[in-house]
Image (cartoon, rainbow, N blue to C red; front, side):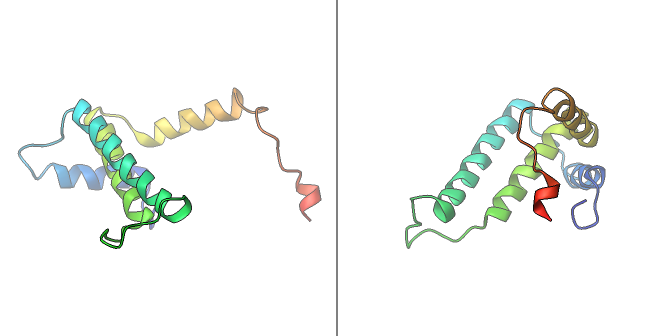
Length: 114
């Protein structure tokens, strides 16, 4: 949950917001373009904080959190426009990771952590 909100709650909140405008959701292709744009902005911020490219003094301060929020919003818009339940999509992916990829990574031995 995000601030006490489920993914379903987030999807309803975004749909309520978008539904107040005549234009509604952008086309799926336009939203994928927006996702690419927002991901680029996130990459730029991560590079400023953790990479080798410091911000110019003329650039405004943006938080990684804000950029992740922008990405989440567009992902929710895309899912809503395609009638995709993100909780179901998440469950599907987690099942895939827990079955197909269950032996792919080295597990932490809990006995050695105590």
